[in-house]
Image (cartoon, rainbow over all chains, first blue to last red; front, side, top):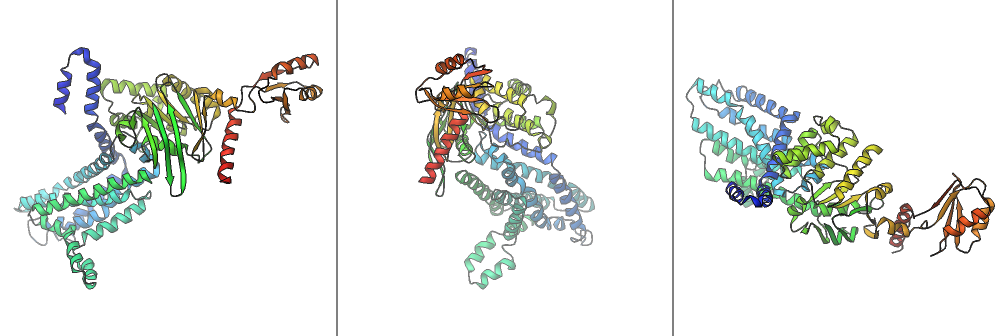
Length: 273
Length: 313
């Protein structure tokens, strides 16, 4: 894009009007996206829900690691007790962060404003997702004292820790994509939250006896098998063991893409309704 | 230019909008009138690309709103119903967001923003969050968002709702100034506003276009067109005589302010005969007026007809 702009700018000065409009058209593709992304990100800095999210995430992550995870008592220099609780923290906190993404726009009428701006539905969906994901990423990065602590206390495998961080971030993205998509179904944030919590829980424990046994009892071996493949927990645990397998990463990326695509389709279908 | 051809929106068996044809060229300000629920907002939402039409087409500056939605929306400035805005942002942040999404940047973008802030008198509230603004300010903030990118086509859903008379006049002046080279659609309930800013009128009822024309054309359809009204303290006898004139259809005296209105028969002129008669009778007349016609009257009749038709069908 930059190259194209330079080329247009080289045109004779007599064409300066044409240059301005051409540059405007060339640039206008990236900017609506940036506009929504920055507005969303800025929204996190000024709304209390986001600060609450980071404070509770950091406090809970720390408390769970030291108390339930017995970080000191087990005498091992790794962050397993830290990452072990991430799925359960995200399960509650990510739907809480994402519930307002579309429900609030629908309730306040700003959805009409947003969808009549010169922006594609996918750009709005993706911009909201990336802003929220970036915010969660910041909260996750702020847990770095855990990493410092464990390195101070012993010699952990930092490769495993890095893989766990990546896995944790990807899992948060999957939860976020699910929650954002469900938020577009309602104008009530409470309903959006509960819906997202339920669906995220289902996908989290899809490989668990809780979900598997009823299915097996019904004799649907194949469905049970397929569903267990969709378990977020299983794939996260695989990555957290330190094996950054392509399949596991692809699983998270595809989950995110699937739910974001569903989000775009629902948003577009609403125009028809 | 904004145009629609047989534009329709159907929900199940209910036609919210049915076969609406509109054409607004630069220089025209079209008033979209109609009772609540007539389909004004739905029509505007389809043109703005928020709702997808179930039939027909809408084009903004030649761009089909369904096939080239982003290009159509880029050419359009839109003030949605209820003037929504992000409540947690400040006015400056909100306008900066709109400017960024619209691709305004640098010096020209900043100048354009300053211009809007000045014209809509938003300076005192720039740093305030939108949630804390009065209704009038909120509407002007959302209006600023619609005008920011200097669009060739403009669509405003009740632009002066909630504004005080001074602010209304300011917004009217703004719309008139912009009208010179733009196609503008304004929906409103205030018929004074139609006279102040619009040079075309379209009346919707039950999703259908019932009347369209210039304000003068519509006023001509009114019962009041070419009627003569006057105020004269002691004119009972004169009214009696006026009622017998061959050109006169009826004489109505307003019970509140005592104003007498003389309605002509179809195609007849009553101004001459009435003034001559008043003079001959030596009636002291305080006020005398030849009526152009009243939009209220046309609005009421046209929308009532549509309702009758619908209930008969």
